[in-house]
Length: 71
Image (tube, rainbow, N blue to C red):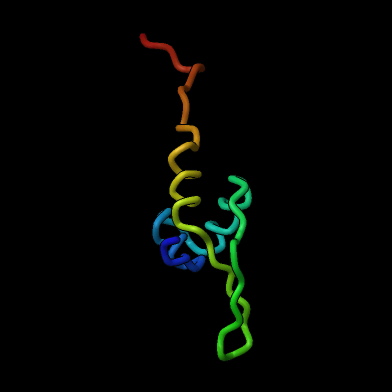
């Protein structure tokens, strides 16, 4: 297994803020594979980068605007 990603690394990969990355992962059904407590007692969720990349690759595109007509 490759090194696990923190939410900051996931956010950098997705190009969003960490709070947005948490919501995005939740919508995509990606769950933390591990939780670690740092020296200050804070819990950090860690994610499998392969799972994050796979979820991003399978997300739908923006779609098409069907309300616009060529004139």
